View 1 (cartoon, rainbow, N blue to C red):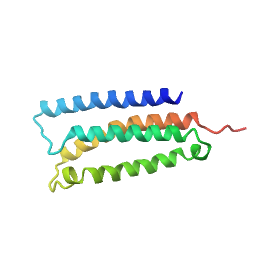
View 2 (cartoon, rainbow, N blue to C red):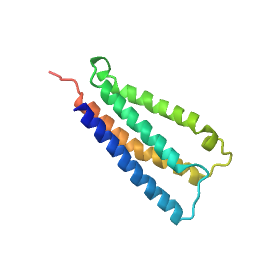
View 3 (spheres, one colour):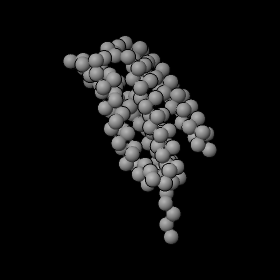
View 4 (cartoon, rainbow, N blue to C red):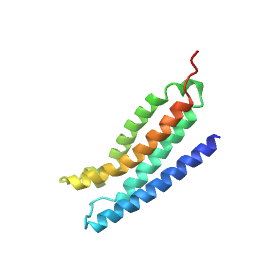
Length: 134
């Protein structure tokens, strides 16, 4: 059951990531916009980190110790994801002195795409692990 979920997570992140990247790239090209950073690398980072977060929380949800803490763990991993992004992309993105609003928006789009999928999967994990009340 768990391996089936992980495969679903992987395929979902891969398909949504690829489709949104190519649509995003197409919109940039059609509007003659260029970015001073690799949009592909941003999508790859967001996709891999989102998959890892969902997979880890899915595994942790099966343990009695962490089952009731999944929501808090998700918040912590999301903060960790932001720190990791800042560390990895510091030289290529965050060191750009005069980053435009268009470039800023184009950094947030991949985050938003994967955040929506993350929240969907995490909410499903939380809903399947609700404690039984009498």
